Image (cartoon, rainbow, N blue to C red; front, side, top):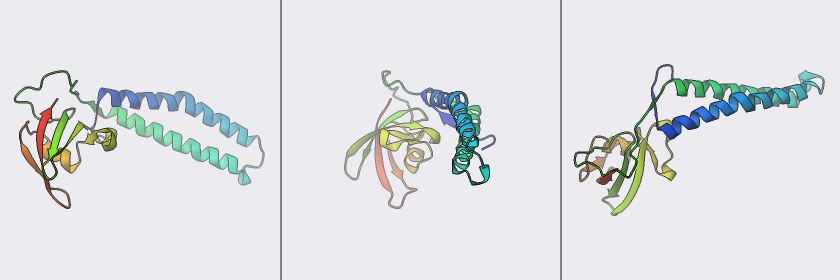
Length: 162
């Protein structure tokens, strides 16, 4: 993870910063109180509350370091706002909102193409590293693309790019 770039939307970047601030300024202080209360109970060698507080502290500090690396190495991607008309020569890229038709059953689905740390397929956010996203990147409306890095390859048609 040292110099690896992480692609995020502006909203995703703001969420990372918000979580970092919350952990540094609020949760860290709460953990210190937990540790102080556990220490006040006496013998630390057999103190389960103290062990739990130390474990919580380790988890919080690890997440803070992870967030700092993500924030430092984030590259904000431009998102489609959905209000602009897609140009005739528009292609699918990071930040695009794409409507696809699965040609096996003619079902349409709409996805935002986002970086892997924001991916949430159940909420329409598809990682750019998925076989589907990799197959449609750099293609235009009307293109039929085969998604082949899966157990059973299938074809999709790009019906809209916003």
